[in-house]
Length: 293
Length: 235
Ligand SMILES: Nc1ncnc2c1ncn2[C@@H]1O[C@H](COP(=O)(O)OP(=O)(O)O)[C@@H](O)[C@H]1O
Ligand SMILES: [Mg+2]
Image (cartoon, rainbow over the protein chains, first blue to last red):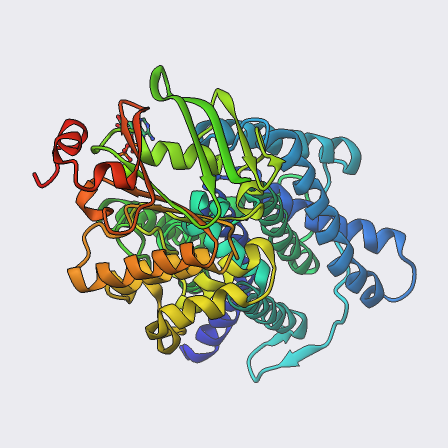
């Protein structure tokens, strides 16, 4: 048996997985890093992004590419607004108390899920890819749309890193993450930083949802897997560490792709679960995290 | 006219009272030293002024503006530069990024920054360095420089010389004096009276969350008996 085609296919699938995971997990990591909030509803923001893309595809006439581009802009804005409202209506009221926010975001998860079920329905809905060109390898064809997912994720993550490193807002976010009280002592409104971070975190998940939906279909329960995998990535990468999250997303996404193609998706899930357990026991600060933070 | 007036602050940690009827007035161009043993409530007093510890009662007026009950981020914007105990640098951020945070507080331009770099020229060559990698003395300089970037009318420093070498201490003291001479109202917290005799204009002794006595510096400087009564000087 010639192993090369399988290896290529598995690598591509792994890269696609890793790309979407990177976006979703970075959102979760940012929210945890700056706000110390474990957002259990994060997967629902991903799902809302996918559903938003379907709504755009249904309502906007013309070629699918137009609706897709619209979705890429509108769905994250819509989801960001929901997150902004949830932060204002719920998280600020309970003063971001760590235990209370877990319970509150579990509630938020069910509210979003049930509202979607009630309005969108229980069926999975397909959305057309913006383009359908297939790249022919000697052994198999591969959708160029999936290359687009990888490219888009790389550009977005690069943009996010640049924003965090070089913008005033990014500087304020990093200062708040590092020492919230001292940030306040220098006039930084922590409440406003939290609103922005929660919205940006949700928007990252939503973009992941929009990107994935032409390859995967929209469904009101589709947020579960990304939530679990994002938690895996955030723990393995080191809680709140952005570079760690990126590295872990690539590791988990790639291993998931490789193990799924060569063995079975179940083994892939076993691997990532085992990895989390081992990391929690032997290196709780994360494979790529720094100790003592 | 006084630059800062604190009147009747009472503050609690849970049920333990950490500040009792704490009141001070600060004039422009003077250094008031708040002295007291470890646990006396000095840091709590500064945090209550900054609004990160909420006083249950009392009034805070800064430059004629009543800031009582303001949100913590609004108080520094009214013109307080703060050097917290232990410096509290954003140690993962660069020297320049720490200064930028100070500049953003009031957004009043670079006058304070230029003055700080004139006082602490070593920082100029360290701008891109992670602030956590600076030496102890340099970290204190940066913490002071960051507060000066606020263009403050009131400067509050919480044990800035704690754990520094004598050579570094002299530089910090000199900088504090020059701020005072430039018209800034300075509130300087220290544990030991001998640390402030040469710079203070007035002193207030604190114990159990309360100011027990206030003196003009001329009253205490040569009055060993008085000093012993309140702090046990030279212990
Ligand atoms: N965050 C806190 N929670 C509870 N008690 C505190 C806290 N911070 C300080 N205290 C207590 O309040 C008192 C005053 O502390 P502090 O203001 O730090 O004193 P000082 O700065 O004079 O050493 C001490 O008894 C201290 O143990
Ligand atoms: Mg103290």
